[in-house]
Amino acid sequence: MSADVVLASGGLSCHLMSGCGFPAPGAEIFQFDAVWAPTILGVTFSISKTTILLFLAVVIILGFFLYAFRRPKLVPRGSQNVGELGYLFIRDGIAREAMGKDGDKFVPFLFSFFFLVWLLNFWSIVPFAQIPVTSIFAIPVAFAIIVYVTWVPLGIYKQGFIPFFKNMMFPPGVPKAMYILLAPIELISNILVRPFTHSVRLFANMFAGHLLIASFSVAAFYLISASVVGILGSVASFAVAVALTGFEVLIQALQAYIFTLLAAVYISGALHAEH
Amino acid sequence: MINVFAAVISAVPGSEGAGAEEMPSVLAVPIDELIIGIIAFLIVFGVLGKLALPAIKKTLAERTELIEGGLAKADETQAEAQRILEEYKAALASAREEAAAIRTQAQADRTAIVEEARNEARTAAAAVTAAAEAQIEAERNQATSALTRQVGELAVGLAGKVVGQSLEDDARVRATVDAFISDLEQQAAR
Image 1 (cartoon, rainbow over the protein chains, first blue to last red):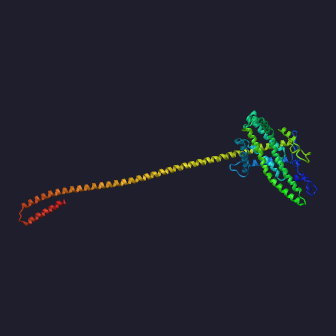
Image 2: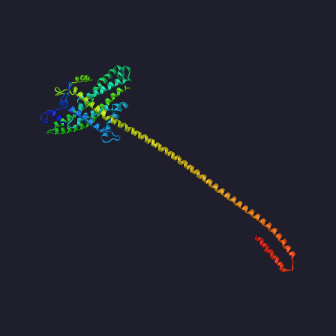
Image 3: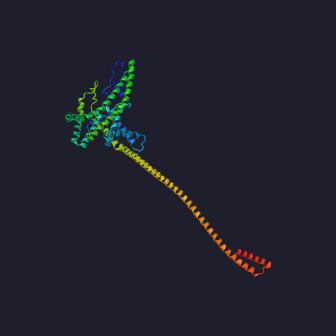
């Protein structure tokens, strides 16, 4: 368990029989002090642990893929194999799956999203990092904004301003009277709610997962005491924390996949009106 | 967009219980974190999109082409091999046919030649026999006629001599006969 969590949860002497209440981890485990706060153009950038992990992820992704694809061979070796696996997964599993051959143009976009989000999620279980950067709400929001400002203008450009909204609000194959109800719902759901759900889905999953692991880790520590209940509880909590960590590995990849797939689906909808 | 989020976020109360009042909400979206998040993505997208991914895309396309090209070539080669095999089989069959025809022809020819030779030999033999018989016949005729003529002449000669001399003289008769016979011998030797 992270030192941050233990220290944030009331100190090293807080245990079951020491007259100390359970220090349940809360929102504070997602707050990190700024280590540096430069002000650029009137905006103060607080550089904290999560910011550093974010840029570390950027460096790792760039480092790996620039190395893996530095001189790609027709017969792949070593890291190129791994990189190609990732590339083909994004191309065939997401881009082409969502938009067919048109998807090839968007592979770099989706590729960047998938691996960045995945690695940011993955920090959750890396010792000493132990915080999914995507559980900082601004990060998924930033990503969702990028997706939003990609597919909306793209849809207007490809379909035309009026047809874009018409296709969105009046999907075919619905009784005419239903449009009174459907048109405003479609407009609100696509234009307003979509970026929100897109970011919250990722944020909430990573936030909740991290909070769960933190709670059970703190519980395992807190329950260490001279009592049968305490020892059993501590062992059980530790086991659950370990199991949840394993489960998180799955969730991290899955959420990165879902985020990227949704981005692909939104772009696909912008390229071709839904039929 | 940002305004929409701000509106939504401000409508959500701080996440939970203790310590929430001094902590900012977990749903807060500070502009600096937003900018940092966007920059982080743009760096990844810009560098990978410009430097790393075009190379691998090109390589994958080349590989696909190579494999497809190889498959097409293999197909072509196989078709060519098949075609050559067919040709070979056809050639072999026609060669066999030809050989059989030649053999049949040769058989027929041989029979014909043997038959012809036999006929020729037979004809030649018959001709030779006929010629020999004719010659023998001619020679016999000639000999017969010559003998007849000579016997006549001799008889005439002998009779003349016998008539012309004295028959008492035995010695003389004997000499005449001897002379006649030797004369005869001389004629035969000639």
